[in-house]
Structure formats: structure tokens, C-alpha cells
Image 1: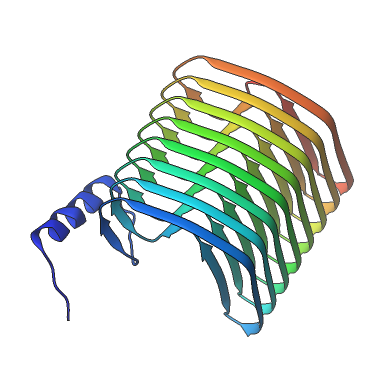
Image 2: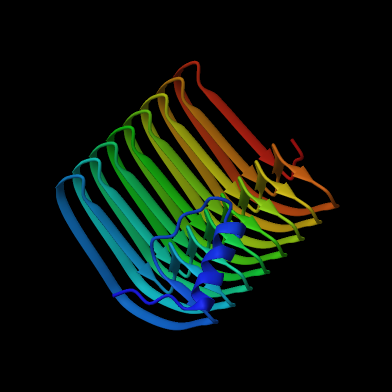
Length: 313
């Protein structure tokens, strides 16, 4: 049985107007959301075809919220393992994903470890921590995010690894963005063809922000390794990339080490730290950037390496 009140009808109309075509198959909340969540361990294992593993902790996903969202989330460890074809692993902690929020977002998120392992074809690994992804937020975003380690491993063809920490990606935010992000280690490893590795920490990527952006980002180490053809490695730390910001940008970024290693043909490595790249900013840009070391290694033909530190490009 379905009951539709007048308020629900109004909320759904607002969702259709503001979300600009985003569809929600989850929940509708008329009011604020406040979650205080503690998890020691989540483990998921699968083998076969067309499987999906999803772990959502202290998150809003595929939903519409007419009110503020406040999440305080602590996770010890998440481990996901799959083998086969067309599988997907997804871990969302203290995250807004594929949702519309008409109100402010406040996330305080701490994760000890996330491990994702896959073998096969056309698989995807995604870890989102203290992140706004593929969403619409009409209000300010404040994320305080701490991660000990994220490790992603894949073998096969057409696979994708993505780690987003304290990041706004593929989203629209009508309000300011403030991210305080600390990551100990991110490791991504792939072998095969047409694979992609992406690590975004304290970053605004492929997004529109009508308000100022302030990121305070600290990363111990990021290591990415690939072998094969037509692969891509991308590490973005304290960066605005492929985005529009109507407001000032201030990034305070510290990175100990970034290492990228590839072998094969037509591969690409890209490391962006405290950088504005392929973006439009209507306001001042101030970057304070410290990097210990960046090492990029490639062997083969027609490969590309790119390093941008404290740069406008």
C-alpha cells in the first residue's frame, strides 16, 4: 500500500526541479537526518557473474532529503573480495551518493581500513569516504575525514578502481565546501587492458560549486601500479579539476609520497597536487602545497606522464 501526503508530493516536485534529472530509487526524508554509527568489521566475498557487493555505513544513497544531514561515523575495517565477470564492489562511509539534499551536509568520518580485491572482466571497485558524489546539495558541505589505509587490487580487462576521500565529485553544491582530510595510505594495483585507477583526496572534480572551496589535505602515501595497454592512473590531492567554482579556492596540501608505475602501450600517469586544472574559477586561488616525493615510472610506447604541483593549468 502506498500513501502520498501533500508534503511528500511537494518534496517529490522539488526533487524533480533541483536534481536536474537525477533519479532516486531509495528514500524520501522530510526533516533532518542525524546518524551516529560505529562498526567494527564488514566482510563480503563472492564468486561468479554479475554480482554486486555494497557496504553503506552512515551514508545517504539514492535518496531525497529535505533538511540537513549530520553523520558521525566510525569503521574499523571493510574487506570485499570477488572473482568473475561484470562484478561491482562499493563501499560508502559517511557519504552522500546519487542523492539530493536541500540543506547542509556535515560528516565526521573515521575509517581504519578498506580492502577491495577482484579478478575477471569488466569489474569495478569504488570506495567513497566522507564524500559527496553524483549528488545535488543546496547548502554548505563540511567533511572531516580520516582514513588509515585503502587498498584496491584487480586483474583482468576493462576494470576500474576509484577511491574518493573527503571529495566532491560529479556533483552540484549550492554553498561552500570545507574539507579537512587525512589519509595514511592509498594503494591501487591492476593488471590487464583498458583499466583505470583514480585516487581523489580533498578534491573537487567534475563538479559545480557556487561558493568558496577550502581544503586542508594531508596524505602519507599514494601508490598506483598497472601493467598492460591503454591504462590510466590518476592521483588528485587538494585539487580542483574539470570543475566550475563561483567563489574563491584555498587549498592547504601536504603529501609525503606519490608513486606511479606502468608498463605497456598507450598508458597515462597523472599526479595533481594543490592544483587547478581544466577548470573555471570566479574568485581568487590560494594554494599552500608541500610534497615530499613524486615518482613516476613507465616502460613501453606512446605513454604519457604528467605532474602538476601548485599549478594553474
